[in-house]
Image (cartoon, rainbow, N blue to C red; front, top):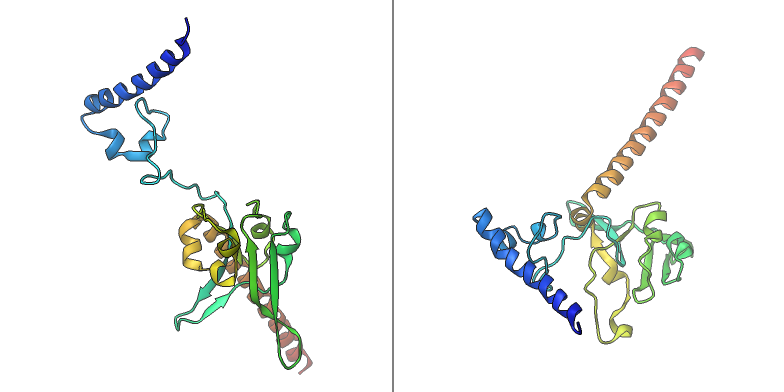
Length: 213
């Protein structure tokens, strides 16, 4: 029969619509509003599962990645320290070559300073692969969760400079708590091994000096 497919499709929609209220009556509560997206995204959902974007948004998984950002640490005095040393590894491994860095130089010696004068990412070219974050030896560049970046003029707003890219370590911890802990633990372990090696060398030197005496 002509139009049978449309009728079937509307029937599925109607079933989910009715199951929403049947499920609420059966459970004695409004599961689709009280429990919200968590229930509507589960395998047990029977009724409506539509997410009313932008009023509602699906939870963002920790490993979700969008355009990168630069991490800075802040001490108790409020002094900000950028983790990036402008080594250029991220720019080298970037497949679409959307990263470019302006290095700082010591005005007296002309030697590079481990702090970028500026850092640019063209987010329209970025393919969100995460290789820059994976290869960064200082955990200075991290993939963000902010995906709502639609604009009318890309040249004015979608070429991010250092000021736009910088975000605090606390923000990184809030969006990627598991990864942040892994990296923090790795740094602590590395520092502990370094301190143990220095202590061993000092003890060996002291023992050698004592033996000579």
